[in-house]
Image (tube, rainbow, N blue to C red; front, side, top):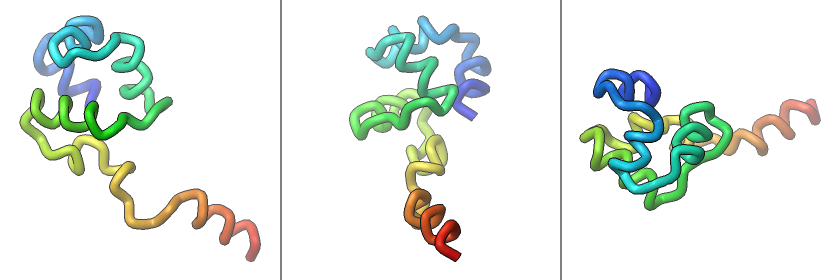
Length: 76
């Protein structure tokens, strides 16, 4: 979703990074899912795109703790 939103605005990763004030490497890692953005970055994305951070980053706001769930599944 993030990559598509960026492309819909005809922005490169570098241009988006400059617009919101983070590094292009960080934008790339966020789009690939290699890192989860911190609170400040969530707010930057939310303000820039005008979309709730819960919609932009739904995996961060899951109720279930993924690691706990995985560990419990392994124990079964």
